[in-house]
Length: 152
Image (cartoon, rainbow, N blue to C red):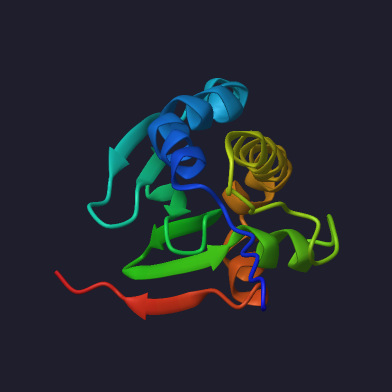
């Protein structure tokens, strides 16, 4: 007789993650948002829950991937008709602030969601002054940001 054991995430556990996403995100990013006077978070996304903080053409977009049970952050900027989008880990590595795989993304349960959001908020707080600086666009490009022209 073959016994099959499946290890996975309970749907009840991840349902708690989904319900708690915005409140946990607000708690993790509160000091960053207040310190840099960012607007938000604004909730969005129909398939993937998304929250956005923004300030004059720059956005911090945090997404909960319900398929992968992961949370990720990307930085977006619009400047002189050009839009750039880069992942947080790519930016932090390009700036020399951390190595790969330091930023947590696991969100399979509430504990991991909280830890991932706090780690990401800490790294956004470290990188944000560089992104806002004169060399921010160069850093975005060095991080391999996707780039395209904005058409009116």
